[in-house]
Length: 412
Image (cartoon, rainbow, N blue to C red; front, side):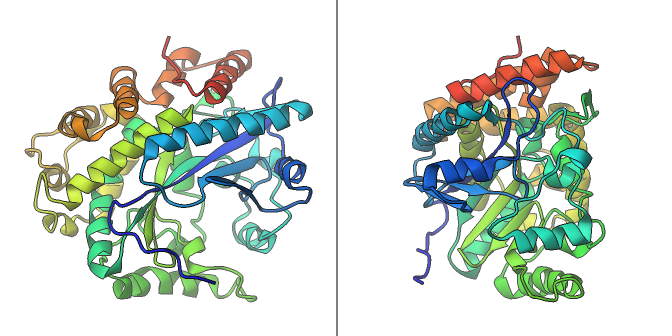
C-alpha cells in the first residue's frame, strides 16, 4: 500500500458530511444505508466510490457519510459535487419512500428504541463500543457532523496547527450549532449534539480526555499524553485488538498522524452543502491567520489551559452568539483586547478581518450566520420553544428540501 501524499499547512482540506436517512412522510429514521449501497454497487459494502466524492457507513445504519475522496484545494467547488451526490442518493431513496435529512441531531428520534448498529464491515469495532458504552443514546446514535481535515508535515507544522485549532474550538459552535431539539422538545442547548457527546464516553474518560486537546505539540508528546492512556483504558475490553488508537480518540480535534492531518470534530452539519462549505472556509481562514500570527504571537496561545477553554466551549454550545467571553488569554490569542464581549461580537470582528479571504459564496453564507444566527437559532425561531410534533415535522421537511436544493434555511 502506498503512503498517503504529504500536504503542507493549508495546501488542501478534507471534508466529511453526515446525513440521516428518514421516511419521507413521518421523518422516522430508516436503517437502510446498506440497501442504498447495495442498490448502487450490487453488494453490501462499507464504501461506495463515486469519483471525487465517496459514500461511507457510520456506527448506525441510518447515517451515511459523504466525503472527499482526496483532500481538495478549492472548497467551494466541492459544494457542486456534494450537491450532485445528495440528489443522487435522494433519487435512489425515493423508491423506498425515504430521503436524506440534514442537521446534527434528529429532533424526534428515540435512540433507545430506534437504534440499529451497522452490521457489516467493521461491525466488530461498533460491537466493541456497544459492549463498553451501550450505543443507544443521543451521544452515540443521533449525531451528525462535518469533519474538517487540515494537513501538516512533521512536528513543527503539527505544533503550529494543533495550537491554533485549540484556540478556535470553543468559538466554532456559536456559528455552527444546528441541534436545538431532542426528543421532540427544545433542550436549552443550541448544540445538543455536542452536549450529548461530552458525556457519551464517561465510562472510559481517557478516550475523550479533556475534550479540548492537551498542550502537546509533537508526535512523541501526543503519543505519551493521548494515545498511551487510550490504549491502557481499552486494553481490558479490546482483547482481540480491533480498535485503532486514531479511531478511539474522541477529542474535539484529533491528530491523525497516519494521514498527516488534524481532524476538527465540533462542527454540526448544516442545512445544505453551501452552508457547510461556508463554515469550512471560515474555519480554515481563521486557523491560518492564527498559525501565521496575523493577530497575535501564536507561541503565547500554547499556554492556554484546556480545562478553561472547555468551560468557554460549554457556555458557547448552550448560548451560542450570546455567550460572553471573559477569558482574557483567549481574547488575547485572537488579537483582541481583554474587554469581555459576546461570541457573536468576536466572530463579527474576525469575519471583518478575513472577508477578503472568503469566496463570494462563503461570504454570503457567513453573512447569513451573522444576521440571522446559527441554524439552531433559525430552527427555534420557526418552531418556537415548545413546538408540537407536527410543527417539528413541517420545519424539518423544509430542511430536507433545503438540503436537496442546496439553499440556506431562512429564519422567516
